[in-house]
Length: 167
Picture: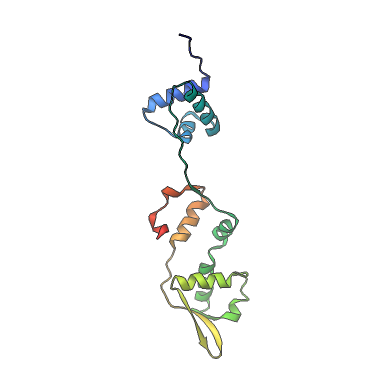
């Protein structure tokens, strides 16, 4: 029988798998041996071709912030900005005044829609004009804001997110 030749990275991966005594993800192995995840994946496939390891592939959904998400992380969600403006104005403000607010920069309809949906505000007629008024309890932080903060620290596996975000 011919002697099997192993690349130094293959030997390192095998040694790590044996030491851990359990299946490991590429990223886990890469961290354990201080190597690039791509290199570990490639060397693991060499080991698979040689019949020395079993590689199981699974798709993982990853959540990450896009351009709008980054903007909301920096400036806050539109509904939060709306409520903060209303609070600073005593809890009530004319829509025409809100349209001039720089903090909302064209996002007033979105802000109103989400704040109404969350039960934070109502729109009512007062003295011939429409006003927005805070009516509900506004939490310090919403699940969406928690998610924004978490994603602001880096990509997150969807299966690792709290179930309350999917209610």
